[in-house]
Amino acid sequence: MKDMISGIESRFFEGPENKGKNPKYSLTDLDNENFRTVGEIIAVSLAQGGPSPAFFKEWCYNFLCSGEVDFSCLSKEDVADVESSLLISKVEDAADIQSLMLWADEIVTCGYTNQIKMDSKESMIRAIVLHSTTRLIPMLQQLRKGMELYGLVNLMAVNPEACHSLFVPGKILKPDADFIMMSCQPHFSEKGTSRERTERKIINFLQDFLQEIEASEKTSETFSNITDGNTGGAGGEKSESLAVQHVLQWMTGQSHVPILPDEKRHFKITCKFDHECKERLGDHSICYPVVSACTCTVTFPVQHLDTYTMFKTIMSAAVRYGGGFHRV
Image 1: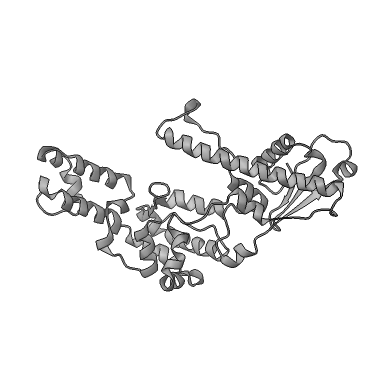
Image 2 (image 1 turned 135 degrees about the vertical axis):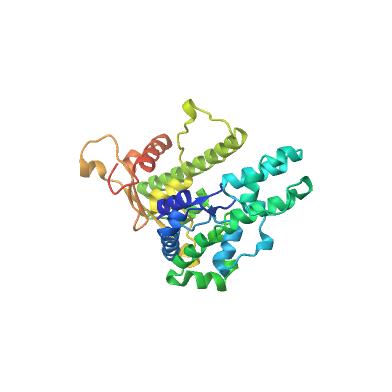
């Protein structure tokens, strides 16, 4: 479901990351009732505990709750399509009436009917904002119709504040190392035995592994912010590094913190330990952890995890390549 919600975001919505998005203006998708299907998928995803579609702009969310648009609250920050954003910038940057008149046809197309002059820039920008946003109302109406599944729209209308963080970016918590470790329930051997000591060492390795990934994520984000706009690397390509959410996805089948309070309260990851893989499988050089995402269970091959270096190598490969219903 995570990939489906992510695919919906990239296919049917546009706007800057982490600042909310608008539906794309597509009469073809509207005619094919694709936005209604999107609404139904969103309702199913939330009914199953997520992931949530936390990528809507505030005005879109308010419309989904009430079925109406508060025009007085619309601003240029609510514009998401590139063409309208560029036109607003051109109007703002126009230094004289000659340069402003270059965009006269585009401004008039947005519904501006007054005389084009320098002291009317705010009115022109207002017309562009209204044109960019109000033309999306049919898409939002169809989306809202689909979200009537399971009574989601009625729930949002009654509890708009409670549902807000599920749709508008900024409040959905990403999983971190502490969340995964607090969710882990290791099945240790008898207390005081050598097996128990080895199992506790592996759990410590897991904590170190998660904390190292988390620290690497923060470093990567800082570097990305510093080099924003540069391609970096050969051909501008980036190799995706491991993130804590990838580990959670591998362990449980979901990469997000549970959004339903009851589900979050009972969320656990069972950790088991296999001490006898060599006796069972014969002489071999490597084994990978076995995951049952349906039951949120991970079984660690103890005999192959003697050191943190071995643990890190094996876990990294397992998380990267072990996402399917198979053994690595």
